[in-house]
Image (tube, rainbow, N blue to C red; front, side):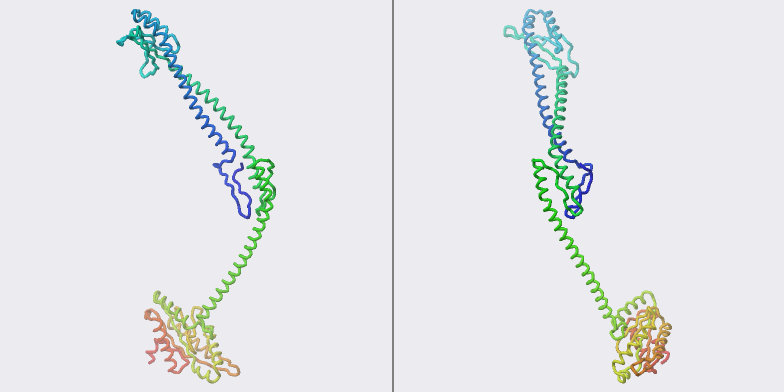
Length: 447
Protein backbone atom coordinates (compact mmCIF):
# COMPACT_ATOMS: atom_id res chain seq x y z
CA UNK A 1 0.00 0.00 0.00
CA UNK A 2 1.16 3.54 -0.64
CA UNK A 3 2.16 6.07 1.99
CA UNK A 4 0.50 9.43 2.52
CA UNK A 5 -1.27 10.64 -0.56
CA UNK A 6 -4.08 12.92 -1.56
CA UNK A 7 -6.54 11.49 -4.06
CA UNK A 8 -7.58 13.63 -6.98
CA UNK A 9 -10.77 15.59 -6.57
CA UNK A 10 -14.03 13.72 -7.12
CA UNK A 11 -17.02 15.92 -7.82
CA UNK A 12 -14.88 19.01 -7.17
CA UNK A 13 -14.04 17.93 -3.57
CA UNK A 14 -10.55 16.84 -2.42
CA UNK A 15 -10.33 13.38 -0.81
CA UNK A 16 -7.37 12.75 1.47
CA UNK A 17 -6.18 9.21 2.22
CA UNK A 18 -4.35 9.37 5.52
CA UNK A 19 -1.64 6.73 5.67
CA UNK A 20 0.46 7.52 8.71
CA UNK A 21 3.11 5.01 9.86
CA UNK A 22 0.71 3.64 12.48
CA UNK A 23 -2.01 2.87 9.94
CA UNK A 24 -1.84 -0.63 8.44
CA UNK A 25 -2.88 -1.77 5.00
CA UNK A 26 -5.25 -4.65 4.25
CA UNK A 27 -2.45 -7.22 3.95
CA UNK A 28 -0.91 -6.25 7.27
CA UNK A 29 -4.28 -6.31 9.01
CA UNK A 30 -5.14 -9.74 7.56
CA UNK A 31 -1.77 -11.10 8.59
CA UNK A 32 -2.15 -9.82 12.15
CA UNK A 33 -5.66 -11.24 12.42
CA UNK A 34 -4.56 -14.63 11.08
CA UNK A 35 -1.60 -14.78 13.44
CA UNK A 36 -3.75 -13.80 16.40
CA UNK A 37 -6.44 -16.36 15.62
CA UNK A 38 -3.92 -19.14 14.97
CA UNK A 39 -1.90 -18.34 18.07
CA UNK A 40 -5.01 -18.33 20.26
CA UNK A 41 -6.39 -21.52 18.72
CA UNK A 42 -3.14 -23.49 18.66
CA UNK A 43 -2.02 -22.05 22.01
CA UNK A 44 -5.23 -23.26 23.62
CA UNK A 45 -4.84 -26.70 22.01
CA UNK A 46 -1.19 -26.87 23.11
CA UNK A 47 -2.07 -26.00 26.68
CA UNK A 48 -4.67 -28.73 26.88
CA UNK A 49 -2.27 -31.18 25.16
CA UNK A 50 0.52 -30.40 27.62
CA UNK A 51 -1.82 -30.75 30.54
CA UNK A 52 -2.95 -34.15 29.27
CA UNK A 53 0.63 -35.22 28.62
CA UNK A 54 1.70 -34.16 32.09
CA UNK A 55 -1.17 -36.09 33.62
CA UNK A 56 -0.23 -39.16 31.58
CA UNK A 57 3.39 -38.96 32.78
CA UNK A 58 2.30 -38.53 36.38
CA UNK A 59 -0.08 -41.48 36.02
CA UNK A 60 2.71 -43.58 34.53
CA UNK A 61 4.93 -42.60 37.46
CA UNK A 62 2.25 -43.58 39.95
CA UNK A 63 1.76 -46.88 38.15
CA UNK A 64 5.51 -47.50 38.25
CA UNK A 65 5.60 -46.90 42.01
CA UNK A 66 2.69 -49.18 42.65
CA UNK A 67 4.20 -51.92 40.47
CA UNK A 68 7.46 -51.78 42.43
CA UNK A 69 5.59 -51.92 45.72
CA UNK A 70 3.42 -54.83 44.57
CA UNK A 71 6.41 -56.89 43.38
CA UNK A 72 8.53 -56.27 46.47
CA UNK A 73 5.90 -56.31 49.23
CA UNK A 74 5.44 -60.13 49.24
CA UNK A 75 9.17 -60.80 49.63
CA UNK A 76 9.48 -58.14 52.31
CA UNK A 77 6.56 -59.77 54.19
CA UNK A 78 8.34 -63.16 54.26
CA UNK A 79 11.65 -61.61 55.36
CA UNK A 80 9.90 -59.50 58.00
CA UNK A 81 8.13 -62.49 59.63
CA UNK A 82 11.37 -64.46 59.75
CA UNK A 83 13.28 -61.40 60.99
CA UNK A 84 15.72 -61.72 58.11
CA UNK A 85 16.81 -58.07 58.07
CA UNK A 86 19.85 -58.84 55.99
CA UNK A 87 17.68 -60.13 53.13
CA UNK A 88 15.40 -57.12 53.43
CA UNK A 89 18.44 -54.83 53.11
CA UNK A 90 19.69 -56.71 50.09
CA UNK A 91 16.24 -56.41 48.50
CA UNK A 92 16.12 -52.66 49.10
CA UNK A 93 19.63 -52.23 47.72
CA UNK A 94 18.51 -54.04 44.60
CA UNK A 95 15.40 -51.84 44.28
CA UNK A 96 17.33 -48.53 44.40
CA UNK A 97 19.57 -49.66 41.57
CA UNK A 98 16.65 -48.84 39.26
CA UNK A 99 17.35 -45.43 37.62
CA UNK A 100 13.97 -43.95 38.58
CA UNK A 101 14.01 -45.07 42.27
CA UNK A 102 16.09 -43.01 44.70
CA UNK A 103 15.25 -44.45 48.14
CA UNK A 104 13.39 -47.43 49.67
CA UNK A 105 12.54 -48.05 53.35
CA UNK A 106 10.82 -50.73 55.46
CA UNK A 107 9.38 -49.86 58.85
CA UNK A 108 7.84 -52.03 61.53
CA UNK A 109 4.17 -51.76 62.54
CA UNK A 110 5.40 -49.61 65.42
CA UNK A 111 7.19 -47.23 63.04
CA UNK A 112 10.73 -48.40 63.71
CA UNK A 113 13.15 -48.45 60.78
CA UNK A 114 13.90 -52.05 59.82
CA UNK A 115 15.92 -51.34 56.65
CA UNK A 116 16.66 -48.49 54.24
CA UNK A 117 18.55 -47.92 51.00
CA UNK A 118 19.35 -44.70 49.13
CA UNK A 119 20.00 -41.12 50.38
CA UNK A 120 17.25 -39.32 52.29
CA UNK A 121 15.68 -36.16 50.78
CA UNK A 122 17.56 -32.94 51.47
CA UNK A 123 15.90 -29.93 53.10
CA UNK A 124 13.19 -28.53 50.82
CA UNK A 125 13.48 -31.33 48.28
CA UNK A 126 10.18 -32.76 47.11
CA UNK A 127 9.98 -36.44 46.06
CA UNK A 128 6.90 -38.48 45.20
CA UNK A 129 6.58 -41.23 47.88
CA UNK A 130 4.58 -44.42 47.37
CA UNK A 131 3.69 -46.52 50.45
CA UNK A 132 2.20 -50.00 50.79
CA UNK A 133 1.47 -52.01 53.97
CA UNK A 134 3.34 -55.33 54.30
CA UNK A 135 0.70 -57.99 55.12
CA UNK A 136 1.15 -61.56 56.31
CA UNK A 137 -1.83 -63.82 57.00
CA UNK A 138 -4.07 -60.74 56.83
CA UNK A 139 -2.11 -58.95 59.55
CA UNK A 140 0.21 -55.92 59.04
CA UNK A 141 3.83 -56.85 59.36
CA UNK A 142 5.25 -53.41 58.46
CA UNK A 143 5.28 -50.80 55.67
CA UNK A 144 7.29 -50.52 52.43
CA UNK A 145 7.95 -46.99 51.05
CA UNK A 146 9.54 -46.09 47.70
CA UNK A 147 10.72 -42.54 46.64
CA UNK A 148 10.93 -41.93 42.86
CA UNK A 149 13.22 -39.56 40.95
CA UNK A 150 11.17 -36.52 39.62
CA UNK A 151 14.03 -34.90 37.68
CA UNK A 152 13.65 -37.31 34.83
CA UNK A 153 9.92 -36.76 34.80
CA UNK A 154 10.36 -32.97 34.69
CA UNK A 155 12.94 -33.23 31.90
CA UNK A 156 10.63 -35.46 29.95
CA UNK A 157 7.74 -33.00 30.37
CA UNK A 158 9.95 -30.05 29.32
CA UNK A 159 11.27 -31.90 26.32
CA UNK A 160 7.74 -32.77 25.27
CA UNK A 161 6.69 -29.13 25.72
CA UNK A 162 9.57 -27.81 23.57
CA UNK A 163 8.91 -30.29 20.81
CA UNK A 164 5.20 -29.47 20.84
CA UNK A 165 5.83 -25.71 20.74
CA UNK A 166 8.25 -26.06 17.81
CA UNK A 167 5.74 -28.16 15.89
CA UNK A 168 2.97 -25.68 16.59
CA UNK A 169 5.15 -22.68 15.67
CA UNK A 170 6.01 -24.28 12.35
CA UNK A 171 2.33 -25.03 11.82
CA UNK A 172 1.36 -21.43 12.63
CA UNK A 173 3.92 -20.03 10.20
CA UNK A 174 2.86 -22.39 7.41
CA UNK A 175 -0.86 -21.77 7.89
CA UNK A 176 -0.43 -17.98 8.25
CA UNK A 177 1.78 -17.80 5.17
CA UNK A 178 -0.67 -19.85 3.14
CA UNK A 179 -3.67 -17.85 4.31
CA UNK A 180 -1.81 -14.58 3.79
CA UNK A 181 -0.87 -15.46 0.23
CA UNK A 182 -4.39 -16.60 -0.53
CA UNK A 183 -6.05 -13.56 1.00
CA UNK A 184 -3.51 -11.23 -0.61
CA UNK A 185 -4.23 -12.65 -4.04
CA UNK A 186 -7.99 -12.99 -3.76
CA UNK A 187 -8.86 -9.98 -1.55
CA UNK A 188 -6.05 -7.49 -1.02
CA UNK A 189 -4.89 -7.47 -4.64
CA UNK A 190 -8.35 -6.61 -6.09
CA UNK A 191 -8.88 -3.94 -3.43
CA UNK A 192 -5.47 -2.41 -4.22
CA UNK A 193 -6.26 -2.46 -7.95
CA UNK A 194 -9.58 -0.70 -7.33
CA UNK A 195 -8.14 2.00 -5.04
CA UNK A 196 -5.07 2.63 -7.23
CA UNK A 197 -7.23 2.76 -10.36
CA UNK A 198 -9.57 5.30 -8.79
CA UNK A 199 -6.63 7.30 -7.50
CA UNK A 200 -4.87 7.49 -10.88
CA UNK A 201 -7.88 7.83 -13.17
CA UNK A 202 -9.84 10.66 -11.52
CA UNK A 203 -8.91 14.05 -12.97
CA UNK A 204 -9.10 17.48 -11.38
CA UNK A 205 -12.74 17.89 -12.40
CA UNK A 206 -13.74 14.63 -10.69
CA UNK A 207 -14.23 12.68 -13.95
CA UNK A 208 -13.26 8.97 -14.05
CA UNK A 209 -11.16 8.50 -17.21
CA UNK A 210 -10.71 4.68 -17.32
CA UNK A 211 -12.43 1.47 -16.24
CA UNK A 212 -11.28 -0.61 -13.29
CA UNK A 213 -9.13 -3.43 -14.83
CA UNK A 214 -10.65 -6.43 -12.95
CA UNK A 215 -12.30 -9.15 -15.05
CA UNK A 216 -12.63 -12.05 -12.61
CA UNK A 217 -15.93 -13.83 -12.00
CA UNK A 218 -15.96 -13.35 -8.26
CA UNK A 219 -17.54 -10.54 -6.20
CA UNK A 220 -14.72 -8.11 -6.96
CA UNK A 221 -15.11 -8.72 -10.68
CA UNK A 222 -18.87 -8.11 -10.41
CA UNK A 223 -18.20 -4.95 -8.39
CA UNK A 224 -15.70 -3.66 -10.96
CA UNK A 225 -18.09 -4.48 -13.83
CA UNK A 226 -20.95 -2.63 -12.16
CA UNK A 227 -18.77 0.33 -11.35
CA UNK A 228 -17.46 0.50 -14.91
CA UNK A 229 -21.05 0.41 -16.17
CA UNK A 230 -21.89 3.36 -13.91
CA UNK A 231 -18.77 5.34 -14.84
CA UNK A 232 -20.38 7.28 -17.69
CA UNK A 233 -23.44 7.98 -15.56
CA UNK A 234 -21.23 9.26 -12.76
CA UNK A 235 -19.22 11.40 -15.18
CA UNK A 236 -22.41 12.81 -16.74
CA UNK A 237 -23.84 13.58 -13.30
CA UNK A 238 -20.53 15.15 -12.29
CA UNK A 239 -20.45 17.34 -15.41
CA UNK A 240 -24.02 18.41 -14.78
CA UNK A 241 -23.21 19.18 -11.16
CA UNK A 242 -20.11 21.14 -12.16
CA UNK A 243 -22.16 23.10 -14.66
CA UNK A 244 -24.74 23.94 -12.02
CA UNK A 245 -22.01 24.91 -9.57
CA UNK A 246 -20.39 27.20 -12.14
CA UNK A 247 -23.76 28.75 -12.98
CA UNK A 248 -24.49 29.21 -9.28
CA UNK A 249 -21.02 30.75 -8.78
CA UNK A 250 -21.67 33.13 -11.68
CA UNK A 251 -25.06 34.13 -10.29
CA UNK A 252 -23.56 34.50 -6.83
CA UNK A 253 -20.76 36.68 -8.21
CA UNK A 254 -23.24 38.82 -10.13
CA UNK A 255 -25.46 39.10 -7.07
CA UNK A 256 -22.47 39.97 -4.92
CA UNK A 257 -21.38 42.65 -7.38
CA UNK A 258 -24.91 44.03 -7.47
CA UNK A 259 -24.97 44.08 -3.67
CA UNK A 260 -21.62 45.85 -3.59
CA UNK A 261 -22.90 48.43 -6.07
CA UNK A 262 -26.08 48.86 -4.06
CA UNK A 263 -24.02 49.22 -0.89
CA UNK A 264 -21.85 51.87 -2.60
CA UNK A 265 -24.94 53.68 -3.84
CA UNK A 266 -26.51 53.43 -0.40
CA UNK A 267 -23.35 54.79 1.18
CA UNK A 268 -23.31 57.66 -1.30
CA UNK A 269 -26.96 58.35 -0.57
CA UNK A 270 -26.25 58.23 3.17
CA UNK A 271 -23.33 60.62 2.67
CA UNK A 272 -25.54 62.89 0.59
CA UNK A 273 -28.31 62.74 3.19
CA UNK A 274 -25.80 63.50 5.91
CA UNK A 275 -24.41 66.37 3.88
CA UNK A 276 -27.92 67.67 3.25
CA UNK A 277 -28.78 67.35 6.93
CA UNK A 278 -25.86 69.59 7.93
CA UNK A 279 -25.78 71.98 4.91
CA UNK A 280 -27.75 75.09 4.09
CA UNK A 281 -29.52 74.46 0.78
CA UNK A 282 -29.15 78.00 -0.53
CA UNK A 283 -25.52 78.88 0.25
CA UNK A 284 -23.84 75.49 0.65
CA UNK A 285 -22.47 76.52 4.06
CA UNK A 286 -23.15 74.43 7.18
CA UNK A 287 -26.55 74.99 8.79
CA UNK A 288 -27.44 76.03 12.34
CA UNK A 289 -27.93 72.46 13.63
CA UNK A 290 -24.43 71.41 12.55
CA UNK A 291 -23.00 74.65 13.97
CA UNK A 292 -24.52 73.91 17.38
CA UNK A 293 -23.37 70.25 17.42
CA UNK A 294 -19.76 71.04 16.45
CA UNK A 295 -19.46 74.14 18.64
CA UNK A 296 -20.71 72.25 21.70
CA UNK A 297 -17.89 69.73 21.18
CA UNK A 298 -15.33 72.49 20.65
CA UNK A 299 -16.41 74.29 23.81
CA UNK A 300 -15.98 71.08 25.80
CA UNK A 301 -12.46 70.71 24.35
CA UNK A 302 -11.72 74.33 25.30
CA UNK A 303 -12.83 73.71 28.87
CA UNK A 304 -10.57 70.62 29.15
CA UNK A 305 -7.46 72.10 27.53
CA UNK A 306 -7.86 75.81 28.34
CA UNK A 307 -7.90 76.85 24.66
CA UNK A 308 -9.72 79.79 23.08
CA UNK A 309 -12.79 79.66 20.82
CA UNK A 310 -14.19 82.74 19.08
CA UNK A 311 -17.54 83.31 17.35
CA UNK A 312 -17.75 85.73 14.40
CA UNK A 313 -21.45 86.65 13.91
CA UNK A 314 -22.22 88.52 10.65
CA UNK A 315 -25.37 90.24 9.45
CA UNK A 316 -25.88 91.97 6.06
CA UNK A 317 -26.73 95.65 6.45
CA UNK A 318 -30.11 96.78 5.01
CA UNK A 319 -30.72 93.43 3.32
CA UNK A 320 -34.45 94.00 3.29
CA UNK A 321 -33.91 96.82 0.76
CA UNK A 322 -32.23 94.38 -1.61
CA UNK A 323 -35.24 92.04 -1.53
CA UNK A 324 -37.69 94.91 -1.84
CA UNK A 325 -35.79 96.59 -4.69
CA UNK A 326 -34.50 93.66 -6.75
CA UNK A 327 -36.67 90.78 -5.66
CA UNK A 328 -36.07 87.66 -3.60
CA UNK A 329 -34.19 85.88 -6.44
CA UNK A 330 -31.64 88.68 -6.48
CA UNK A 331 -31.52 88.53 -2.70
CA UNK A 332 -30.79 84.80 -2.83
CA UNK A 333 -28.00 85.45 -5.33
CA UNK A 334 -26.54 88.08 -3.02
CA UNK A 335 -26.65 85.60 -0.11
CA UNK A 336 -24.82 82.98 -2.20
CA UNK A 337 -22.13 85.52 -3.15
CA UNK A 338 -21.66 86.64 0.46
CA UNK A 339 -21.39 82.95 1.50
CA UNK A 340 -18.72 82.39 -1.17
CA UNK A 341 -16.69 85.37 0.06
CA UNK A 342 -16.91 84.13 3.64
CA UNK A 343 -15.88 80.57 2.65
CA UNK A 344 -12.93 81.84 0.57
CA UNK A 345 -11.55 84.11 3.28
CA UNK A 346 -11.65 81.99 6.44
CA UNK A 347 -9.12 79.42 7.55
CA UNK A 348 -9.45 75.70 6.87
CA UNK A 349 -9.93 75.08 10.60
CA UNK A 350 -12.83 77.58 10.83
CA UNK A 351 -16.49 76.56 10.56
CA UNK A 352 -18.57 78.98 8.40
CA UNK A 353 -22.37 78.57 8.77
CA UNK A 354 -25.60 80.29 7.75
CA UNK A 355 -27.90 80.35 10.75
CA UNK A 356 -30.92 82.00 9.14
CA UNK A 357 -32.00 84.84 6.84
CA UNK A 358 -29.06 87.18 6.16
CA UNK A 359 -27.19 86.10 9.32
CA UNK A 360 -23.94 84.07 9.23
CA UNK A 361 -21.55 82.80 11.88
CA UNK A 362 -17.96 81.53 11.81
CA UNK A 363 -16.73 79.34 14.69
CA UNK A 364 -12.96 79.87 14.97
CA UNK A 365 -11.01 77.16 16.79
CA UNK A 366 -8.00 78.17 18.99
CA UNK A 367 -8.59 81.83 18.13
CA UNK A 368 -8.20 84.59 20.72
CA UNK A 369 -9.74 88.08 20.68
CA UNK A 370 -7.16 89.77 18.49
CA UNK A 371 -7.06 86.96 15.96
CA UNK A 372 -10.86 86.98 15.80
CA UNK A 373 -10.87 90.78 15.36
CA UNK A 374 -8.36 90.56 12.49
CA UNK A 375 -10.43 87.85 10.73
CA UNK A 376 -13.64 89.86 11.18
CA UNK A 377 -12.04 93.05 9.79
CA UNK A 378 -10.76 91.09 6.83
CA UNK A 379 -14.26 89.74 6.05
CA UNK A 380 -15.87 93.18 6.50
CA UNK A 381 -13.35 94.80 4.18
CA UNK A 382 -13.52 92.06 1.49
CA UNK A 383 -17.31 92.13 1.36
CA UNK A 384 -17.43 95.92 1.29
CA UNK A 385 -14.84 96.08 -1.53
CA UNK A 386 -16.46 93.34 -3.67
CA UNK A 387 -19.37 94.56 -5.86
CA UNK A 388 -22.13 92.04 -6.46
CA UNK A 389 -23.52 91.83 -9.99
CA UNK A 390 -27.28 91.32 -10.14
CA UNK A 391 -28.11 91.39 -13.84
CA UNK A 392 -27.85 95.03 -14.95
CA UNK A 393 -27.46 96.28 -11.38
CA UNK A 394 -24.33 96.30 -9.25
CA UNK A 395 -24.64 96.28 -5.48
CA UNK A 396 -22.19 97.36 -2.80
CA UNK A 397 -23.00 95.48 0.38
CA UNK A 398 -21.66 95.99 3.90
CA UNK A 399 -21.93 93.81 6.96
CA UNK A 400 -22.02 94.32 10.72
CA UNK A 401 -20.06 91.88 12.90
CA UNK A 402 -20.22 90.86 16.55
CA UNK A 403 -17.46 88.89 18.25
CA UNK A 404 -17.29 86.78 21.42
CA UNK A 405 -14.34 84.74 22.72
CA UNK A 406 -14.14 81.92 25.25
CA UNK A 407 -10.70 81.57 26.89
CA UNK A 408 -9.24 80.82 30.31
CA UNK A 409 -11.16 83.63 31.99
CA UNK A 410 -14.63 82.38 31.02
CA UNK A 411 -14.03 78.70 30.13
CA UNK A 412 -17.25 77.65 31.89
CA UNK A 413 -19.36 79.55 29.35
CA UNK A 414 -21.95 77.42 27.54
CA UNK A 415 -22.88 77.72 23.87
CA UNK A 416 -26.14 79.56 24.43
CA UNK A 417 -24.42 82.22 26.54
CA UNK A 418 -21.49 82.43 24.15
CA UNK A 419 -23.81 82.99 21.19
CA UNK A 420 -25.83 85.60 23.09
CA UNK A 421 -22.59 87.52 23.75
CA UNK A 422 -21.75 87.53 20.04
CA UNK A 423 -25.34 88.54 19.19
CA UNK A 424 -25.18 91.42 21.70
CA UNK A 425 -21.94 92.60 20.09
CA UNK A 426 -23.59 92.38 16.63
CA UNK A 427 -26.57 94.40 17.88
CA UNK A 428 -24.10 96.97 19.21
CA UNK A 429 -22.50 97.27 15.77
CA UNK A 430 -25.93 97.71 14.18
CA UNK A 431 -26.86 100.44 16.68
CA UNK A 432 -23.60 102.31 16.22
CA UNK A 433 -23.53 102.89 12.50
CA UNK A 434 -23.30 99.44 10.91
CA UNK A 435 -20.36 98.27 8.72
CA UNK A 436 -18.21 97.78 11.80
CA UNK A 437 -16.78 95.10 14.10
CA UNK A 438 -17.53 94.96 17.83
CA UNK A 439 -16.16 92.48 20.38
CA UNK A 440 -18.36 91.68 23.33
CA UNK A 441 -15.46 92.32 25.72
CA UNK A 442 -15.03 95.88 24.36
CA UNK A 443 -18.67 96.94 24.77
CA UNK A 444 -18.29 97.96 28.41
CA UNK A 445 -15.35 100.24 27.65
CA UNK A 446 -17.09 101.84 24.67
CA UNK A 447 -20.26 102.58 26.65
